[in-house]
Length: 486
Image (cartoon, rainbow, N blue to C red):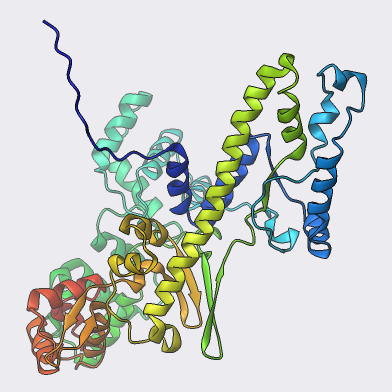
């Protein structure tokens, strides 16, 4: 038996336009530029305002309004018989030089938007391959060398066991390479530039580099003995044991250890392209007297508008049943372009509101570069009357350029700690205090986490030892034993 019933439910759903706005909101400036370029390619009704048109509009801002009013009073007549019949030529579709819906216009140099070609560069593997080509390898050894290069990780280490690599090469290419020949091939690779590349451990990496280092032979001999036979004492910083076993005074031992410290523990690290080596800030905050000028970095974001010729075609379709199919297509594209432009403008407004609230809450930091106050997403959300998820999308991956450097927006948010005097302190300020304590410690007797916690407690900050350890590790500061120096 069938039963009919009614049920009332409350659901929260996002429209496609809201989803598009949220997606654009979380994009950093470079990703936004690429997103706009893709939308311009996909939607024929969306077009970019040229620089000449921007200059003309700024010279006579009422010209566009007058032209639109004149067209409304005397509608344009079809130019040809083909257009009267509802047909349009290819030139009609290409000559889209009219105004319509558009984003805010900004003046900028056209050169800033050009994509400059980057010089051709060789990565680490390509450079190593070129060097291997100069060695006297047999064809089977060359095959093994190429396989070894393919197993080197980003730090420059060979993480896979060499016998397994040799076994795969023998099976895949029907060769008969022995482990001894494989070790010889690997030894030659490790002595290429950079030295130590393809090492299987830190000890092996430092040994190869020390063998090729340009230093005094006596110092090299002691350094090799430390790395080969006394590596555990070296890593544990048992300086007294090293001095006793080597028969050296502390001054001579210091010279040997200094030669080891100059070696590179990650020979494959440090390969940065020009694109990876720069941060493009999304905001710029400048101080003018007692006020802060906040600028959204959108000079490379092209002003957008909806092409007027297509809008005219959309209006004409109402009177011409033969154009219903074209009109439906144009209507969908028109709605998509209109919502995209609205999302861009809404993104700009939301980001500026968040940044203004952030500057107001952290005003002392923007003035002095210090005294960061505790701040959470909820505080900004309450000020601008938006959801916390919106603040998170604005903050994620965005940077601001200030007089004190370039900072990620996440940097300005932190939890709070309360002192004995009832004052709220940001945990970032506590980290800065811990770093200052460690920087001022005796290098011969570094402070333990317990001792640092006791010193902070004496200053009114009650922090547990494990919290000190967590903050120290977040700042990539080693434990006291590893900070010890001779």
